[in-house]
Length: 209
Image (cartoon, rainbow, N blue to C red; front, side):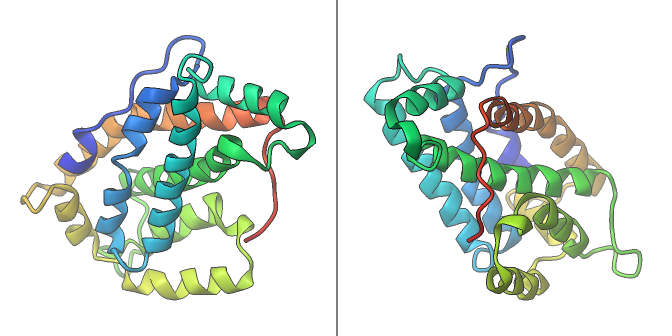
């Protein structure tokens, strides 16, 4: 669990604005988390998250004051790009990044909620499948969906996954899950806030890969 707890997300202010710099710093530590699920099978999602973080950071670095919050980025790019928005720039990158973050959020929440395959309680396929179905499936075409179905059979056992999260240390399952619960408080609030920004600005797109 050290892998997540060492890089907590900030508590959001009352207005739910997500500051860009601390957000980018926090999400930059998430790609190694996906290695715990399987460095090979989750490489595409990891690469997608990393690439989108890089794109958002490139825009932020051009004018940190103008792009202080994620909402300010979307609003500025809407003005800058006109009819091409939101399928451009940091807006598009954040649209896809939030879906990767939602995948992580739903997966971890499913784990701490105790959802499992009763006949194979040490497998995490149930949790991964739920996360994929909610966060990503609708944006993937048939071929990508089939690749994912095949990939989850290479997912690690829950015990091995939790040990990887703890950087190889032997920690009791409940202790590890309790730390995940704590991580999810600010992480989930942040992910939900990003989704809310896209909803309010009508910035989401529904095309498939």
